Image: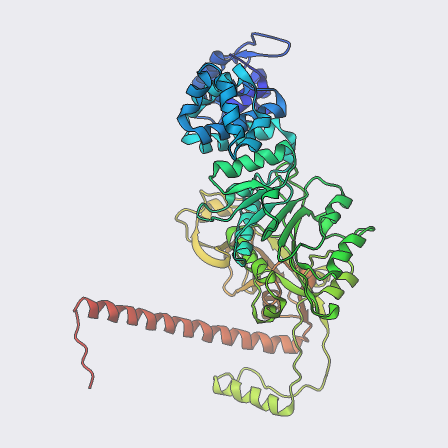
Length: 624
């Protein structure tokens, strides 16, 4: 069997340029790279390549010989996209027939008989167009059996081919492929939205849901429809049939509970035309480049019409890197649902800008929960605490400049203290033993001057310090404190090797009063300092003359919605005398808070010890 350079890359599980590098770098030496058997086009002997890979240990495939039948399967099929479609169709046919497929094909007239039988089954429309004819089908099925011997069934083999052949040979398939994080987010959103309906049916409205449909949980029993989009939609339908889902063409039902429309490579006009109001009670998710769905555009009339129609429930701007074929591109997600019959002035759209965040599991779970709630009757929205999404009046969204996904600035009510309130504030401080910190009296100056974090940085009042990237070996048995973002929360813990960490040229340690943050809604004050900040966590350090306190800064970030940016984190400027008083109060309150938490910990430990002692009959408790 002869292999091309691309075949060798597939066999070794590396990128195509790596093979070129091997050929030139290891042209001589103890184990030289094999010489080609054919120069134009360049072809190598498969046995020579397998021997070289095994002797040198190059590549990422521990058993390249086990995957050689996959290349034979491709060789037996048709070239390019047709070969990918044929292999996918054949594996679906093998899944439907079971082990008897090859024997049935090898019988006299077997290929024609199998095609007739398949045509009469529900599988016919998904595979027949893409299968080869006659003896070619039998030869391809024989190669498929050899390939299946090295995998745990047809589904496992199909997954391997999808990752190591299909996307490389089929550009359209690669262009519509999503990262695992985004595919899981879409699948989870579909399940959550469908669960609000009685029938739990979902439509792949663009026919290219081959990335997210396999991520639907195995226990989910809803029907799946796939819109007709040629060979790509047939491939998508086969991925669902391989998972034993109740899947069929989009025309198999008149109404669908949830529709997902991926418009990744369409023009601006084509994307905007997909934002039409959903039919009936359908809920629709539209995924497209953020430049079409979120960012300002000169010809955005269709987009504005959708917003004015009262059917747009949520707009989410997603981080970059979720589309492997274009990793720098940012995508956005729209959720459309049935008409909101409130007056337009009262209608709200929920937005979130996640472009600066990592789409990890906790964030995705919170976003799914918010999307599900946003799709419900608008009368229920006021009773919910939103985790990721922020509500914006739709009229304001249309009138303001900038991105549609930008959440509104956090607005905190300014309370004006009356004379009685000042007396009450003084009394409360005295009751807590803090009457000696500073004298509390009414101010002679009224008004409030505010700035945001970005403006404060430009005025040199604070400095942003990025977290450092730490390797896995650093998180060993060290004792240097480290700020990390674990399970969706900021955490200061021990466990970083001090010598290895401080040897990094970009290493730095926090100072007392630094504000550590991950984004809007997540900020803590490092009261003791001396800790490492690990990426993606950051820190803000106040200048000595900064007209604000760390507690102000921390509160401004903590009350801001998730996905907000430094430009939206606002706080008031405070005079120098006021800063000293506020800092003294904050320090004393933090001391008391530490003491109270320590006492609570002791109480909990005492309760646990009493429970253990009583349950094991180690003590006897007598009550008078």
